[in-house]
Amino acid sequence: MRDEAAVSPLMKAIAILALVVLLLPVAIVVLAGLNAGEYLTFPPQGLSLRWVWAFLSSPTFMGAYLYSFVLALVTTLISTALGTLASIYLSRSRGRAAAALRGFFMLPIVLPGVVLGLALYVFYVSTDIGLARSFPGLLIGHVLVTFPFVVATVTASMVGFDLSLEEAARSLGASPWTAFRKITLRLIAPGISAGSIFAFIISFGQFETTLFLTVPNHEPLPMAMYISLRYKFEPTAAAAGIFAIALVALSTVVSARLVSLRRVFRA
Amino acid sequence: MSDIRLVNLTKSYGEGNAVSDVNLQIGEGEFFSLLGPSGCGKSTTLRMIAGFIRPTSGQILVGRDDITALPPEKRDIGIVFQNYAIFPHMNVAENIAFGLKLRKLPKAEIARRVTESLKQVGLAGYDERYQRQLSGGEQQRVALARVLVTEPRILLLDEPLSALDKGLREEMKFWIKDLQKKLRITTIYVTHDQDEALTMSDRIGVMSKSRVVQVGTPQEIYERPKTLFVTSFIGHSNVLDVRVLRAEEGSALVSLAGQELRTRNGGGLSPGAAAKLVVRPENILMGSALGPTDARLEASVISEIYQGALVRYRLKVGDQEIVAERQNQAHVERFPPGAEVTIGWDPEWSEALVA
Ligand SMILES: Nc1ncnc2c1ncn2[C@@H]1O[C@H](COP(=O)(O)OP(=O)(O)O)[C@@H](O)[C@H]1O
Ligand SMILES: [Mg+2]
Image 1 (cartoon, rainbow over the protein chains, first blue to last red):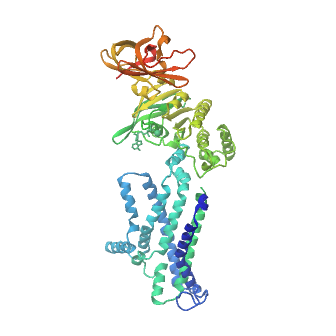
Image 2 (tube, each protein chain N blue to C red):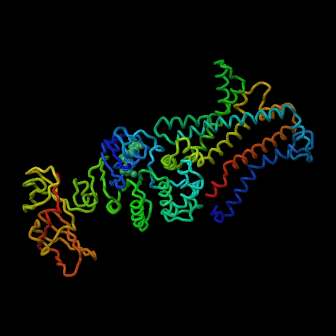
Image 3 (cartoon, rainbow over the protein chains, first blue to last red):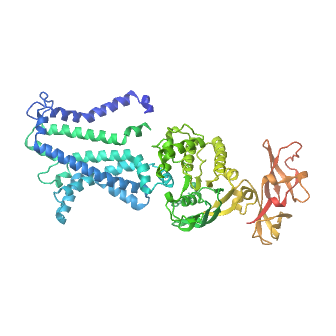
């Protein structure tokens, strides 16, 4: 932050332009959701809360919204816990096994979601272990998709983590668990928090893997929006989008609050 | 009791040993240094004592307790790391209180001891600062305070001065030594710097290639090196090729370029064998400075290097070169290049070692 003055006006202009380009679709969705007209159009034909009310009173959309929320929440909890443990292991072990494992953990990022969804579906069906089109089956898919993002962010936060901090705590009398909790966890908390935000957002918006794994009559929000748009070109889906965006923004703020990102950046 | 005994302590990593068969006894309240070049196994030894590394074999005893299998938190041994390891998310007071809180002391007692300990290390009023607001020397003091406030049985220091600049290093050297003396805490100090080891220690253990090769007081280590390694690692020495003529208990007669010399016997010498004669430049006398009982050699001056307080001579005896240093005092004899001169030394100040 000290170098703020050193950023050239050109860089600032490019940054602002990039921000505008990235935020434009968000603005379009929000405006489309506030449309007063019958159909999903842009620019909107006047503003109203008509479709927002339609969303709030639609059992399909509200159900899908809550379902996605719960799915994303459970996914985030599991992914964050597993991903953090994996990152700690990876950052503390050398050798071929750890390197191979690191690559393996990252695999779902490079694998197209469709391929992963299809693979899981075929696996569930062919083994007949009762996971096909079930909540646990879907949850496994979401954990697989989000896990690499947690591993990537938490591992990054552990780079340069000084193990002697933990050792100092140990010789001052802390058990391994206490030393981990009071030192390591505190210091990598921003990474864990960032990872969990990623996991939540990715799970909440996940579409292509979900496609193969959804439980009949329990569509997550992205599926519900897609289905709705296929049959009726109504702005309710865009209104749902407004709530999705709001939730993601809120989760970011809450998570950042919990670990006080400010403190990290101040340092 | 807080004396330490290391018994056949060994740590191997796959192919080689990081620490081999180390046997040491360190007395209560003693300041003991492990001195050796980088990679010789000092930190590994220290980390085994602290409990971060499990020995491959051997034992660590404190007083009468065998602590070899205890986890670090049960050892009551404090350690100061090379990089100080101040917890960056806690301020100075919280850092120092860390060990006390784990011991479940009452709040008021903790506050009192933190304040007291900050005063002891000369950092009164630094309570609220964070690691990033402290200089290297201040971090060093906080690290020491954090350890000492828990009153450990033993204090371990791993190259604590190597991250400081030279002036501060000199100051901290004496400060740490004084603090240790005042507290009478058994201390093991790891360093690769001979000056630190010589000035601070009660005794020094010199390590080379995973082994402790000599243990002794600074004076013994400096004046009576037992191996060529110790000789070359501590200070500067002339190491000369000689042949053993007679070897007795404690002393020997050797020949250097056809001239006979008496010297101390470092042990293991046999008549007729080649050996190395070790003598420090500052112990070499020249010309009229020689006494009647000194060992004598005829030499020629190659060059004279004026260094202010010192004058350094490069001399030739046979085909070997010897360096001599003389204090540049009033009326001291000077020798121009090319001059023939008798040089020598007290036989007690040279040592013949197995080549
Ligand atoms: N975890 C390890 N795995 C393999 N070799 C190690 C490990 N730790 C230390 N060593 C080796 O053991 C030797 C002694 O290391 P160390 O005790 O750190 O030396 P010092 O502190 O004297 O510089 C070195 O050769 C080092 O490479
Ligand atoms: Mg070391």
